[in-house]
Length: 186
Image (cartoon, rainbow, N blue to C red):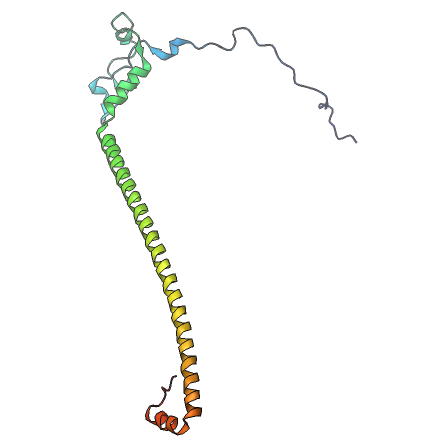
């Protein structure tokens, strides 16, 4: 049994079909960017709960009877849709909160930058102080090691002098040792 089906042949390729002339629009028509009239405004009686209704049943006159109001007779020349929507948005949008929030954002950003600079200055000061403390500590450790060496040399010298005095003057050394005993933790 073959794995290929009768309707599929592995060497077939898709065929380019010719397009009908004028079937797909290929150019951009400027008609779509212009509107000849403004959208219809409903009368005040057609509002329900504050929302304007454009349904024919909501008004007393029919749409067909009021079509003459919206014909382009020169009084309503072409209106740019983008300009119209921009004007509507500008009229409906209050920019004061946005301006306030932008000013607050700029002020907060400035304060944050100032605090960041202050933090960097304090960090640099702390690093300088740490370097100074490390230098002082290293100097103190060198001095402590020198003092320890000096004390060890002095202790050896005192021990050798005590041993010489004990050998040369044993009676006097014994009396002096009893009168002035050595420290216990020594």
